[in-house]
Image (tube, rainbow, N blue to C red; front, side):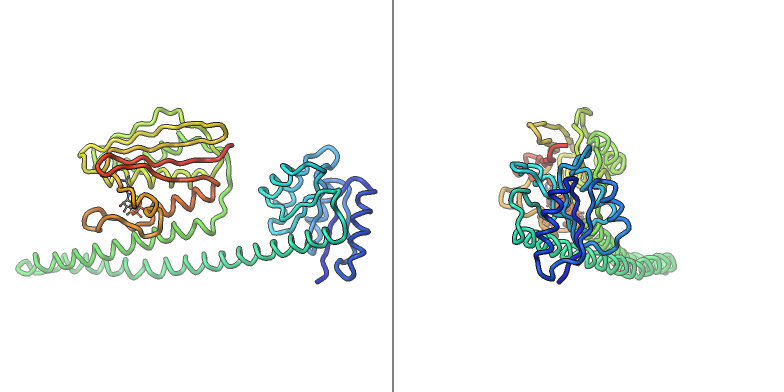
Length: 358
Ligand SMILES: Nc1ncnc2c1ncn2[C@@H]1O[C@H](COP(=O)(O)OP(=O)(O)OP(=O)(O)O)[C@@H](O)[C@H]1O
Ligand SMILES: [Mg+2]
């Protein structure tokens, strides 16, 4: 299949080399577009609807090639980019791939074969990503409709039972009321499960914007959201405000902290749950440790609790859907981080979150 290629390079000689190699590929490319600087590159991307692939020289005059790459992807997040790097610039190639380039090619290794291979790879990967994104969007729409359509009858059922309970004759009231309460509790449990499933699946489709996140602020936000649970459990939460900043999505990071804190309060029989949040900065890595004095977890389950629906207790012991930690794991994966725990039964649990460098 023929490709529309934009060659971005400030050196006329290098541009010509690439153009010549591209023209040698029989029937592989359409007339080639060229750009010698950032502005004309971005103009082409904004105006030309049909560019399949950009070969982007890393060292453009007066600009950082990675910054240009970011701007290209802001205009067209699905475009295929092959970063053309200098000799020994492997670290730049790695950075470019992290930002969203599909492939890279060192300048001194450019020949017709390598160029055709890189462009084919890049365009195939970009089109695969587009397909995945389209499918995820479709799934999100489907999930939203499903969530709406499943919750509506549950709400009707709950309110109808509420009215029925009020109208019950006093002599049958107690027995019947107990059964009706059971139905309402079942409906409420199902509603919580639907909402938890929604939040879990949303992590696949939401593309959060990453920014600098002050973890102290997110702990305070989670504390506020859980204030009534903390109060009801007589729990104390300590965090000395010295947590570091990380790169991430503030609402998602808050959700991770909130899910773990929620568990620390819930899985606790001490009568006075105590939760401590501390941090550790090791080189590039930032670790947050959340320690409770709860019921603890036996060694064989310490990995499995991060699987969806894995619960170690029946609902009448501790209520829950089994999706809280699976959601945390998904969010931490998306942040390029890790989550695990250390625990002993009856001796409390420490959840460790590890975020990569800023
Ligand atoms: N701090 C903790 N101490 C002891 N056990 C825990 C702790 N946190 C999690 N667990 C165990 O791990 C299981 C999974 O936790 P997870 O948060 O995923 O689900 P959940 O709390 O059951 O439901 P929800 O989806 O409402 O959070 C829990 O059912 C519990 O058995
Ligand atoms: Mg939970």
